[in-house]
Image (cartoon, rainbow, N blue to C red; front, side, top):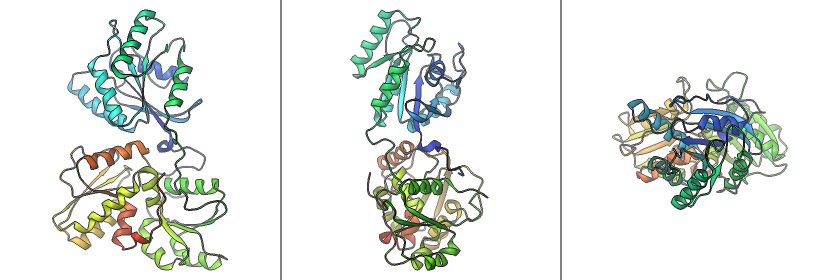
Length: 408
């Protein structure tokens, strides 16, 4: 994905998911919470058919993605399909607001409890919201809040989308629910610091959008500038001339993983080497797990089955790293009959048991929460998983020579 230097990528924004039964007031809550007409408000159940993702600044939380999900409680076949998309939205959610319907008897029903348990099992903080306080009797609000505390141990937040009552308290609670280190992860970790020299090797091939940089390059460059590093950027063919004009060797060279071998052969011995993909493996996923997964590559054979999961949904391009280069490298080693399945976007299989290895892209398009949900699914099913850059480094025999960011 190509972006400008001054916008916060969606994958780096706090994802706030709004969940609740059909016609419980989710869309009205979102509009009141954000101060904008983000979602359509209607008394007709099922107005929100698919999750709606809206990027915006929400004071005092900063850049967020607000996710308005389809309401649960629709028992039709279409409703079941919508719930699959709601489940996917839940896997991307950093913090969830669970809007409780109440429906007069102030009971927290089993469906609401099901989604609460699902979110908690995925490590997602949940805030219960009791809406429509402008028309609910105070006794009903109090009873519903007591029921929530009794069943879950969680506090409930009464709000009115109509009057705005309770919105500030809800936002303050969201801030308290943020993990301590949320937003503090660094792409380059501690590999480089203030005023150290970094060389970026960035091939501008058919996959690079004309006149722009791809997202991992933009984010890495911006972080290095924020660190006050000295940064030089070149295309692959200018690597040797660039090194020749430098008075000292770069502390770190970051390259596109496709040219790992060439850069390694020509870099100064004292310069550390890594790739954008390896950095994003640590930034978005679990790098030690990916390195462990790469060890399973050697156990593949001509009858193995590999899943390649890329996040982008672009049309296939010539010499695409995931669709062409990595499959070609694997088949060169293990034979042409090795099976490679490719999925893109959010089309990640529930059942992974038929695969011997999963190779995930750098995941610059997804937030870390969703990437970690994929990793957890692979772990639970006992299927090894690795990453594009880690795979290429392993196949070219230089994985043990690549500099890895420390765990954060």
